[in-house]
Image 1 (cartoon, rainbow over the protein chains, first blue to last red):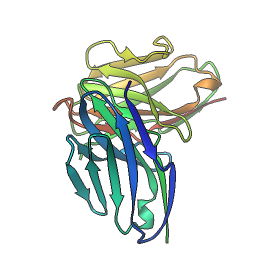
Image 2 (image 1 turned 90 degrees about the horizontal axis):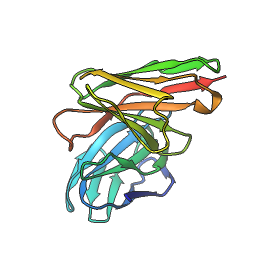
Image 3 (image 1 turned 135 degrees about the vertical axis):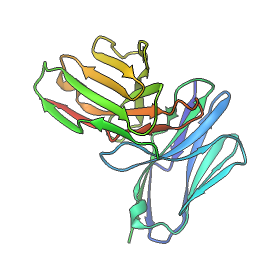
Image 4 (image 1 turned 180 degrees about the horizontal axis):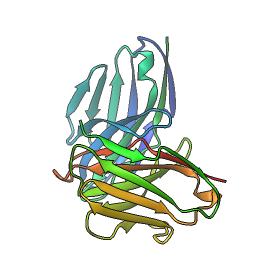
Length: 109
Length: 117
């Protein structure tokens, strides 16, 4: 059974304080790992797809990396508008997405 | 970017009412759409996979007669919660995947907050 564990559950940062979110996964035959951002009362917003170990993707202050067991979402010099819940999901073979429970990020000014 | 529109955003209705939720892909064609349910501080729970022109595939424990899914075109899927009861109150979210392939990401609507009195 595919499993996705995200840590920490919640993270509080000061504006400008860089940090990383972790997504550990157990899956047979990873086809893709996806990062989403979800604001309260909204649907998830797609951020990145990573397909193979060693791959990295960047978008503004966010950088996602992938190994064979985990993915990290690095946030550099975050701003209050980066506050959201960040979801990680994996897809194995032709199966559907398996989501983690998310990391709730709060960035204080 | 890919846009998925979900309507309505919020529904409040009496117990026993049936509620229809629409999910549209606005700028791409979606062979496959997905319906999720999300409880507070929990992850998204897949309810069913909707394929255009065929019957939906329901996840274990999801009643197909309770949650009717129709995917009549490449841009529209609907979820009807029949005879809704308070325990059906939840946040329902749809997503659509570009028909470009299974490696394409799912794009999500903004969800429907369903409250049954």
